[in-house]
Length: 77
Image (cartoon, rainbow, N blue to C red):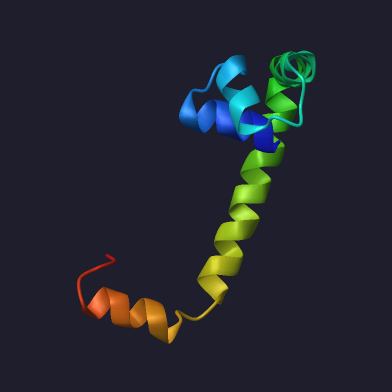
């Protein structure tokens, strides 16, 4: 999922993914991307479920004093 997310988010081709994930061979990267495209609907649902879960945790977690300070200083929005 991480490899596919990097591909979709950054638009990285296999060679760029290989630079970011040097522990994977190009064959492994192409295999992972092929698997994604062959099972796109199921994997998209899974990735959305994961994103929704993270968002629910973020929403339930109070803002840290550090983030509050950065927002008050206009560094974060």
